[in-house]
Structure formats: C-alpha cells, structure tokens
Length: 97
Image 1 (tube, rainbow, N blue to C red):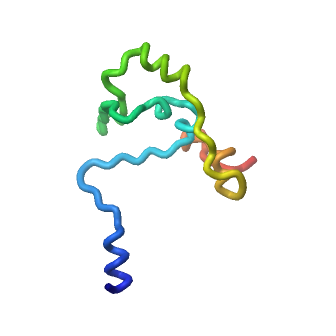
Image 2: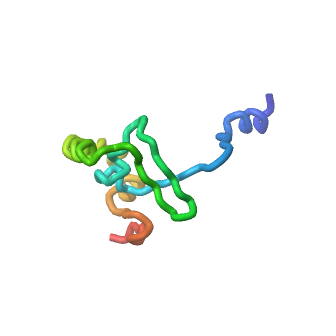
C-alpha cells in the first residue's frame, strides 16, 4: 500500500453538523467542565447558542461543588506557557506576559 493510500485511510471523516469549541474554561471549571457523558445538548446555529437540556439546578450545584481540575498534560515548554497564559479569544488569546 502506498504512503498516500495509507495516509488517506487515517483521515477523520464527518458528515453533517460539526462543532469545535476550544477554550480554557473546561480546565478552569467553567460550564463546559460540568457537562457529563449522556447530557443532552441543544445547539442553535442561527442564535449561536449551546444549552444543556434536562439538568436541574440542584444537579449543576452538585457538579460545581464536586468538580476538580484535571492535571495539566504538560509541565514545561511552549504548550505549558500556552496553558498558563492564554484566555479565550474574546479576551485576546495571546501569550504576551
């Protein structure tokens, strides 16, 4: 099998609506950090909103109280600097410090 054919077999293929959301809020305990497997999420692409459905306020409070930050996957280098300094894009997303 040629390199090109082998490479093509490993490509991620997706069909339909795809969401990518990368911000530090999950590492910092923001709302995304509290979402669990099995939660039903509603996405409105026109209104630009994402909502978790069928989770009562008491459950959110329990999740907030029991949440613990996962350990950082890196402890040095450029990626470590990035994880310590960068906020989300609405706040600048820069590493100047």
